[in-house]
Amino acid sequence: MPDVAAERPHSDAEQRTDGGALMARTLRAHGVTTVFTLPGGHILPFLDASIDEDLRIIDTRHEGAAVLAAEGWALATGQTGVAAVTAGPGFANGLIGLLDAATWSVPLVMLAGRTSRNRQGRGAVADVDQRAIAAPIAKWAASCSDAGRIPRYVAEALHRARTGCPGAVYLEVDSHAVYGNAAPLDVVPGGFPVEPSRAAGAPADIGAAVAALASAERPLIVAGSGAFWSGAGTEIGRFAELAQIPVITASAARGVVPDSHPWSLGSLVHGGLAIPSADCVLVLGSAFNANVMYGGAPLFGTDQTIIQVDIAAERVGGNRAADVTVIGDIAAVMRDCCEAWTATPPGREEWLDRGRALAGASLEFWNRQIDEHTGERIHAGAAARTLADLIHQRFGGSATCVADGGDALAWALAYFRSELPGRLLTTTTALGTLGVGMPFALAAQAARPGEPVFLFTGDGSFGLSAMEVATAVRHHLPVIAIVSNNAGWGDVRYEQDELFGPGRHVASTLPGIRYDRLAEALGGHGERVERLEELAPALDRSIDSGVCSVIDVQTDPDVVSELLRMVAQLGLM
Image (cartoon, rainbow, N blue to C red; front, side, top):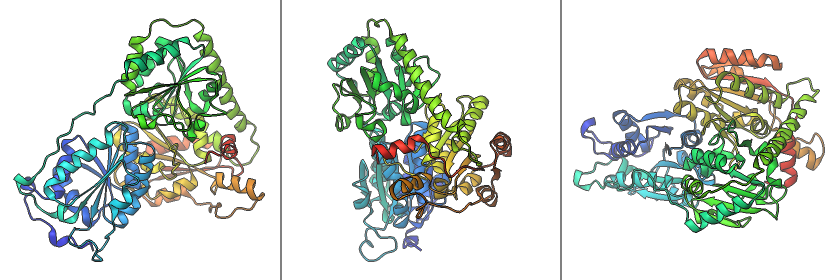
């Protein structure tokens, strides 16, 4: 039992001035509606105060899932995600979400309890120097040990997370502050803008970018995650139509320009085949990391003009220098580019047709991998393709798809469409964290209760957060998880075969667990699918059940996508 119970205040709800109440009140005043958590003694006053402040609390079965769900909330909504964890082990468990959000520049606030200052260093329960651990990870890290200063610290944490280049921030509040009461005159309010400012690009840089795009014969736009955080979809789509430039969306930007947009080439998986043929590429809000082959071959050439737009100057260049750099908010820069555009050169429709042909050839390549399969069990790609078609037919763009895993993720990236922002959440961070599927799906369902949420995941990745099915059931979040069950870590087995010879599988084989029965044991709905034609009716029954469902699809363990093979050969990890 944490040594904080003696500090618990005794105040009427309307008059509460304890730190927990100030924390909840400040979050609500700054627009936060939902907090993901797992309870512990160091944050109990905050959780109790959430009742009076009308903060929705979604408690998970593991702190890692809580912080990942907060990240998923941000990815689904574009708003800052908030998680609260207790001290010590609770903090340590939640670090994976802080690390993943920090690596992917996702606006997230991780609130943590902390041993009271007068007991630190004395062997108190859960006493760890948490800030020292979090500081190298977070965009900003701070400690608060005074109840009256909590409003200022919480307001600043939210401001820091969403201002400029978004990021994960860490704020710990020790038990003395959480349980202690602040006199009204001791309360220090925060003084930060309600909405972050939007920095405009320098006119000369805008002019250089427009000139390069106007003189190109085969220009291309690649929109990365920064385009999503900027909310720049409308401006990018308008500029693409005005300048007649094909658009590819990647990572968190999937859907900011709909796949059905007349100038969209869809995802990086398919549309990316046009990049080597482009003579000018406008990169919006994306670093030159492994997701884009470090800005080099075979995706990018050395004779291309590269224009890079980013909100933060420190994020441009790196693995590759851009020929033209524009520092500014993506939406503002695109708006200025529209205003600066004069005339579109002829021939761009032919370039669009060529890009579509390349994207179509890529899709056909993926289809052949499935159609030529002769194994007895279901091809994982066939399951992903069928699921994507069913979701598109029944819900159009008004559904959220989440993808998690190694090979399962690859097939989902190849087939899942995206018509709206925040509707395709995947394991595509530079960190490559597995197990995000259920937390992301929980958050998306909580954010949009009127829209269905589907998770396509490998069995290995699902196992990392499978107990969150109980969370979904408890909070009435009818997520439908489709598990590609090939009884192992398929991508790892492939690498072992390549490195050490066939069959030398150490720690990469999993038992044939009945995940459908696990769902039933946790209060959800379960289905087992052994033939592809069983998937559609199983999906219908799961939707009709109205509860969190798990569809256990028996997939072929010998199947590995060509994308996974190429990733291993190209040394992207």
